[in-house]
Length: 421
Image (cartoon, rainbow, N blue to C red; front, top):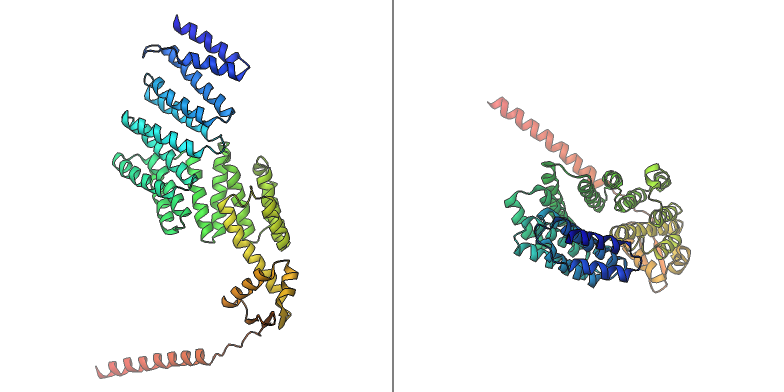
């Protein structure tokens, strides 16, 4: 009878239009005592707690959502372990949609993992700690992330849980990449792929592996291989309607730009698969490709400033575009100074529309890197460019001749030795 009454109250609560009234009605349902055999009541309370959490999510009320998560622990005592894990993960997922709630989300996830450990729910604990590692990475708490990863890896290797092991090694690769330790990042990714090869790897996890592979190949300037991995990741995310398909598409376009194939960007964007994800992110990459194709430093800088959210806020895009900007500046400077043997630095800066100090620093770097031969006369504010020196081949020819003589002497020695024998 109580279950029927609660079901009716749940329907009434869900029918309310005023959020405040709905919150009060759902909270009342959760206060109703439930036993392990009250299946319908437990089911209704499960729906009520999720709906209440969604209301707090819509109101961007992260503290209230954290309280709901704590409150759910009294409800899940009577639920099956599988349902418990699903409910807690659902509630934690709602946090990610509230901007600026990362710290609170970390705290809530940590408390939930501790509760799962104390309640002997080992599988749930490992899942929550894996989620916690990802949150640490997003919050740049790399030391805490590595400590937790090492602890998890020890447990998982004993249990031989390949699925979570793959996820943890993948997260380990991301941490080391963010710490600019590429050898360890590659080793962790190899471990993740090895673990994934022995199980059925879900499309989303496979897409994450491909995405990380693309990122590491891009760090090695192997943009052609990186593009292939980003394409695989894009297809994987796209098939699952995952929002991470957009970053994968952006990285595909980035690889084409870095390969000086800016004309391919329009072809990719015009494709059927990419058209689903048209928006400011894709338009930003298209604008960068146009600026690069036109060799326009001014336009390039303008796009970086005006589309900061789409470009500079993404560390991978930002780092590679910084390298591209540097290359573009170098190309522009080389084109300008090519006809001159002596030119004012201020004149060069005016032509590239950059501050004189920045141009002077870049020219110094280019001279040290032996991009061209020249010196900076800072007293006169001029750049003096020298002709390319003719390479004296005498030493090379001499070494080659000595090498040939050495071979002849060696052959004569062998023949003499044979004759004596």
